[in-house]
Length: 460
Image (cartoon, rainbow, N blue to C red; front, side, top):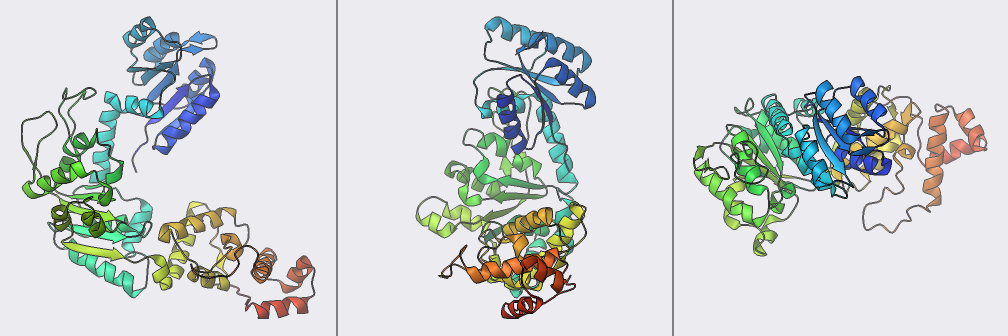
């Protein structure tokens, strides 16, 4: 797992600092805040930081004086100066004292992100960590388990997907297109193909095609040479070079900017690239696995995707059916994720109520496996009983689209959930459950028979 870039924001405008903290945390930075110089230096003594985002005007001490001390005490820490009152003299002094950038408030969040990414240290660390990740497989412990267990699922459809993935893994130069709704596990299948192949010791490089902006797309894919444009402070390898000898995984390929598609096609065909600003041709060799949740043929008809690129990418096509079409996979997924989150949250593995599996198999998972995973994580966090039931999953309706059944106002459904919840709370002791519900035990038994609720001591 890669080390996150550690950032301290020292600014007495707490609302601004918290907003910036949330933005950077969403972009995988480890971020802390401090409102006074004293708090800031105390935080620096407690933990090492890679970057300090420092306001010029602070109570009791100027930002420039803080910058001078930081450069003496923590010479490896980079500093970006920010201010709403800066003038050219302040800028010059800040840069002279060792700040790597200066931003004037108000600025867009993207401006600070780009300022961070312009730092030499960030670029050096980023590429070191990316190469380390790629060389050491980029697989989280969870994903290793998924691959070791041959993907979670017992349905015929999933077995067909795995058979195709196994076939694709034996042909290193064959490009693969994986289709399926969001949340079905397209990247996991891509990783299975890569790590089952002879290329498994070479890089697996995942790229979100829709996240690459038009202004940076050439640099990101082809790399650049130092000085080729403003901000190019060092040579940089692009995705094609990083993936050399391995696999380039292009997620959301249908969202790739049209301008890049022709260049991608040429790189695939020629296996040669030139960095932005460079003149030397660089030989590359990689397999492309792409994924999409769109109808690519429809996009081709509307001139939004190149037909020739499509033919290059889909030598083998693997379609992953949505979870609602393979309900037999829900129970093994449920058991796997319950065990996974029990270990992660340091909780005992709960029992599974008989009605829960049935309710989940009738639920329409628009978010597929990802939605089920999130539901289980939430249930495991808030569950304080020894058994998981539908009440823990907040299944207001287990009907699939097209049903006219009421959702939240179904009295029988709410009564059933209330009984299940009370049974859970009382450890399936019917006398205590009846007392909690304010009814007799005989009345409870009649209702349990009505809703086919069985007392399940253990099901794992």
